[in-house]
Each structure stands twice: as C-alpha cells, then as structure tokens.
Amino acid sequence: MEQFTDTETNLFSAMVYRFDVAAQKLNLGEGLYKFLRYPTREISVYVPVLLDDGRLEIFKGFRVQHSFARGPCKGGIRYAPDVTLDEIKALAAEMTWKCAVVNIPFGGAKGGIICDPPKMTPGELERLTRRYTAQILEFIGPETDVPAPDINTNEQVMAWIMDTYSMHARRTVTAVVTGKPVELGGSAGRREATGRGILVTAREAIKKLDMTSKPPTVAIQGFGNVGSTAARLMHADGYKIVAVSDIHGGIYNPAGINITELLAFTGKNKTVLGFPNTERISNAEVLELPCDMLVPSATENQIHAKNAPNIKARILCEGANGPTTPQADVILQENGVFLVPDILANAGGVTVSYFEWVQDRYGYFWREEDVTSRLHETMIRSFHEVVGFAEKFKVDNRTAAYMLAIDRVAHVVKMRGYYA
Image (cartoon, rainbow, N blue to C red; front, side, top):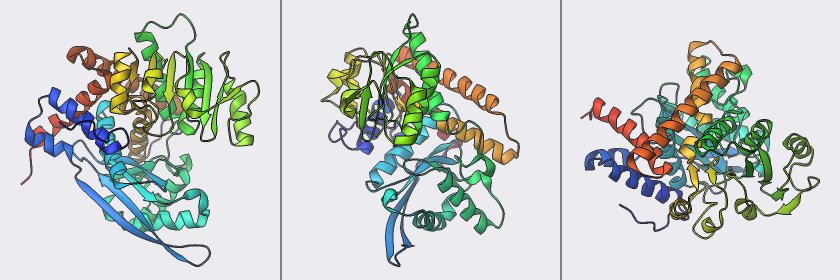
C-alpha cells in the first residue's frame, strides 16, 4: 500500500491511497486490484482555437475514462488554468466509486481543458468547446461516455457539446450529455441536485447522531452553485447558517445569516462580502468556526494536517470533491468528527444526471417532484448502506464508502470476466 507521500497536495495520490486501504480490507486479489486501480483509457488532445483578435491558440485537453464495468462512463468537464492529467485521472476514478456508492449503472470519467475562461469571450469558449468535442467525438456517446458540467462549465457548454455531437451524428442526440438546459432535454431539478443531496445526507447524519433537539448550526465554504444551493435548502429546512464564503472571502454571524436575503445581495454584488450584520473572515477561518456541521464546497485539499486539529464541527459533510486529505482524515477520526464523504454527500448531482439520461433515452420527462422524491430515496438508502458498512467492518465512513463502491464494481467485473 502506498504511504501518504504527496497525498496532501496530489489528488491522484490521495485517491490511490484511499483505494489501497479499502482494497486491502476487502482482500481484493492482485489481478483485480490492478484492473480497478488503473483507468481504461487516457485521452490527450491539443485543441486549436482562433481567438477574436485573429491569433491561433493551442489548448491542451483531456478525457480519462476509468471504468466501463457497470455501464457508460459518466463525469464532468472542467475548464481551468490549473487542470492536470493527474487531477483528471483521480476525479475519473472518484466518479466510478461515486456512481457505485449510489448504485447507478455508470462507470467513471472526467475531462478538462487547460484554459482561463474569465479571460475568454463567449465566442472563444464556444469554438474551444466545439473543437474539443470534435476531437473526442469517437470516445463519447449515450452508451459510451456521457459528459456533464463541472468547474467553469455550465448548461450552455453542455448545449454546445450536444449540438456538435448531433451535427456529426446527423440527428439530435440529447442523451450525449447531462446538465443541459431543460428546453434541450435537461431534467427538472438537475441544477439543485448536488445541493439537495447534501441536505438529505446532512439530515440523515443529524438524525444518526441524535442532534435534532435544536436547529443545527452550519458553516459553508464555497458559494457557487453547490454551496449556495445547499445553503438555501438548509436555511429553508430550519438550519442556522452561521458562515459562508466565496473566492473573495467569508462572512460570519453566530446568530445566523438570512440566506434568502444573501442570495439577493450576491445577485447584485457578485460576492458575499459586505452583506449587512456580518463579520468578514477568511476562507480558512470558515473551516475552523464553532458549529455543528461544516460543508466544504469549494475546491480540493482545503482540510489538511495543519488545520484538521482546529476543526470544531461535529459533522463534516463534503460538498466539494476531495476537500479533505488522507492525513486530515486520520486526525478528524481521532477527534470524533462524523464524516459524510464526498463520494456520498455530493452524489446527488450524478444521481439526477442519471435520471436525465434515462429521461432523454425514453423521450419522457418527469415532474420535479418525482425527480426530488427519487433523489431522496437514493441518497437516504446510500447513506445507510455506507454507515452500515462502516459499522460492520469497523472503519471510518470514507473507507466504508470506498469499500462498498469497490465491492460493487469488483463483483460486476468478476461476473463479466476478462475478455482476451
């Protein structure tokens, strides 16, 4: 088994370490271990884009497909200047485990392009998206690999991908991506799905720890789609949101923040900073506040060996992918923090993406109440399956989630056999 080495900073090393821990506890054979440890395919492309000023720029893009064992690959595409192949490989594997945790028939994939979207015009982003799609066209499709939005991509980007794929297919293929506009075959409730899944698992954790006697206090790092949706739904559910933050910093009020008013404020000001009756704090300080529940919904590696001893929350519900390092996991477990791991807590998004894919393939669309009801059922069942695994094998919840997921994928691989 790999040691910690660079798992404090490298998302791929952290994923491999956690996979190794779970695989050992499952007594996974060496051959099966190797089969699940490595991705099926890594695709690198160089994407030429004609910029608005007439210059030709070359962008590097990736698509990693980790596993097809349980069904088509599934995973987002992110646009960011710090995208790396290691990051994409780690997130593709995490998608395999995430889909298996909530027991939907997908494998894992992830994509990304090294670029800086805020510095690009809409026309440049469209040309980048369409050319990238054309270069990975033979590797994606409704029964092969179904992309979705991620960091700096959205419904519009998914519409461009769908249209590009459809033009080459000579027919409209809505099921090639999820996270689309509802008018183009998107699902009702998809935009809120990740935040809603966080609420559902948080609610189950509160019940599990018998903390229902008073409204739980919550601090949320990250106020993008996931963090803001979780905040809005938790606020509506009676939770007391004491702190939130965005890329500019955080705000704190121990008496609680009115999230409805904050959303109106951020809609005008594009930041949470300056919201009345709050104290300005840093993103790092948000993590260490006294509260019942901490919801890191920003980026990876936010909770690490240095700040983990200062975490005061009773429950850590991970809205982001990989916000906690393996070193921090050990410290948090020793301190009695109840973890709802990312591959469970934020799986609401991929769950409703699956619902969207099903609806597209049937050509029949559900009411939002039906989507929400099915999401609740999936997340509640999955929460208790993970906790049950943790209690059965006497491991922490993250290891339990990995064990449950790996066991499901390994079972399918063994049944299918090895084609030769």
